[in-house]
Image (tube, rainbow, N blue to C red; front, side, top):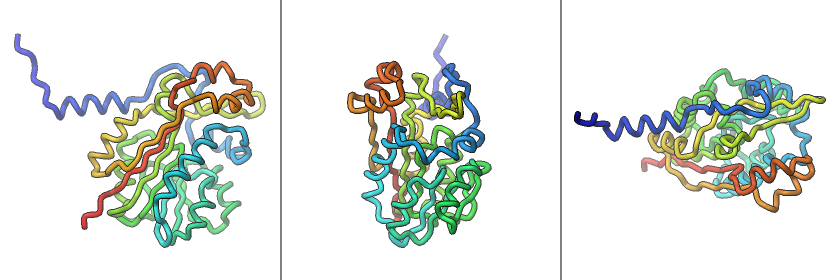
Length: 260
């Protein structure tokens, strides 16, 4: 019996479906939806001196941002939370900075720090207030794995990005999530985990390339000996040993080619 022919397009489509399928792997802690979890986390979110992920994100984001001129430009921060990166963004004098998040609690904290901030509560992937091709820089830090529909989100980000604009992404590495890694915090005696999807980076890049975005840089950081003290402070050495050598965070810089 002759084999059924599978076109290269259908093969790619099957691959992307595999890339974008949320993991069904059992997690150590039950996961809450991002809006609910971050509302509960918001009160203590800015007071986490021993949070390794936030420290790594700070370094990655600073490294990528240093190469992007933003003075006089429009910036969107998707998953802005409490505005962790806003001081460094505002210090470089953009013409506009708009923040988007699903958590009213996180946005309320941001508002206390920046009373005149432009903020929007997200209900889906759309970015209200941003016209097509109006944004020079869109940043999304530690957020991608919380998105319910990566394709729709990236398409919307591409819509608002102007030619020559930049997209900066950081997030918990899907390799760590696939091994059972979670974003958790304590509320009293309770450990609360935030729901994540697993979006492998090749799948994310495949969508970006189909939208016409070009990769500028891709950075990864693995759990190594230098991170051991962070785990010791949390009395989590078994977790450290389990993830030693596993990528824990990544950063991507993409650009929308200028037609000129």
